[in-house]
Image (cartoon, rainbow, N blue to C red; front, side, top):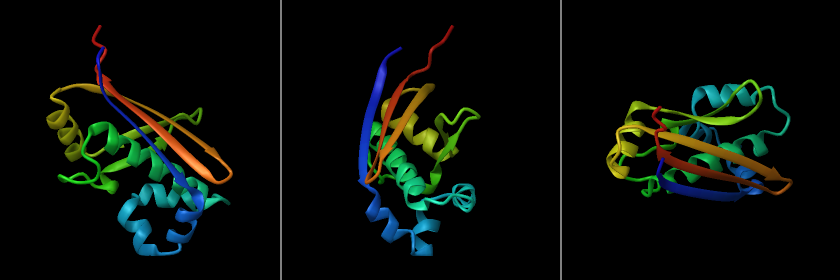
Length: 131
């Protein structure tokens, strides 16, 4: 296994708190699934700041940022039954990763953490572990 990319992002939750009041901001950056999941939560700013940081960390791990066809809504952040976050990518995003990192198969690792005022996310992209 070879590490192909590493990305990290930190965001002040107050920035997101102001931005999520704008419905266009939400619909431009987050999938309908992510938006629907937020409806039952009390602290929407923290929820969206963690998703935002995770998407940014992936764009940095790819090495492009959000350009060359990479869009926020092509990356979805979900959690498994134990709460562990993971990426669900569009086919377009998978192709961008493959092209930029010159690999056909890869694994993604995501860690997200938050503290009152900040959210941070860390992403690793590595070659797929083939057995």
